[in-house]
Image 1: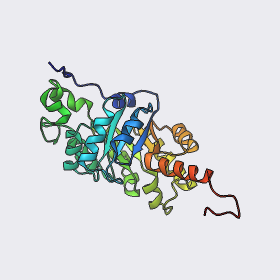
Image 2 (image 1 turned 135 degrees about the vertical axis):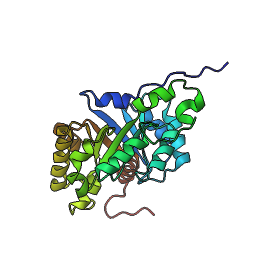
Image 3 (image 1 turned 180 degrees about the vertical axis):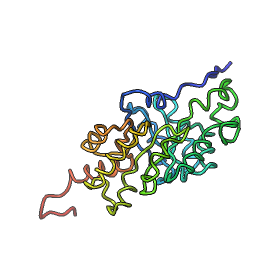
Image 4 (image 1 turned 30 degrees about the vertical axis):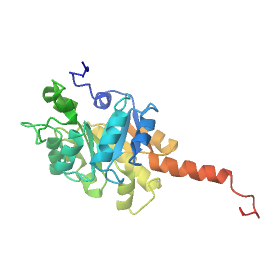
Length: 265
């Protein structure tokens, strides 16, 4: 007779937010389960399946969650938009940690906090889906809310103005700074490493920590990682799979570039 788990496993990422150890992760934008499985075996603490800026839908998200499941890494899903129905779908598929993009107000943050939790405390729809192992996780209904984790993204001037109010929302577990969108609002489109952007990101991380919540950020160079960890970041995305593939293939091709004055005929 097949053996199935009866108890909901702990959300290791959420547990880690309460500690002092920085959790490092990777962004998954290739929308491919093989790539996700390879990344899952690398030893990261978390992996974010991105639906906002990558061609991920419910099917590709499900396939990646299944590929990641065999490894001790917590999957996170960033839905296309911070909307209740999209959060519900991602969580039904098995995600327990959600990054809600473009949250600019405390009211929006509260809506998202409700979306990741079942009634009566929340508004999450009830279904015996993959999240409950189709009803085989006997303690799912008792444990799901405690293991759910909501991260809201701070990526605009409006969000910065409302930061303290957003951080104070019950059910918001952490805040994540989006350097690219924040940099664009500051007039530095496509320059997440600009000194003004870096300063704003570090200041925002410190403000989040001062408000009593863990802070996260995406930083794709060792220098930026060190800078933001020093500012107080609790979790850091240190790479994006598409960018890594683009860079490594370009580097490989460059290693075999023709010598000056020669062409490949």
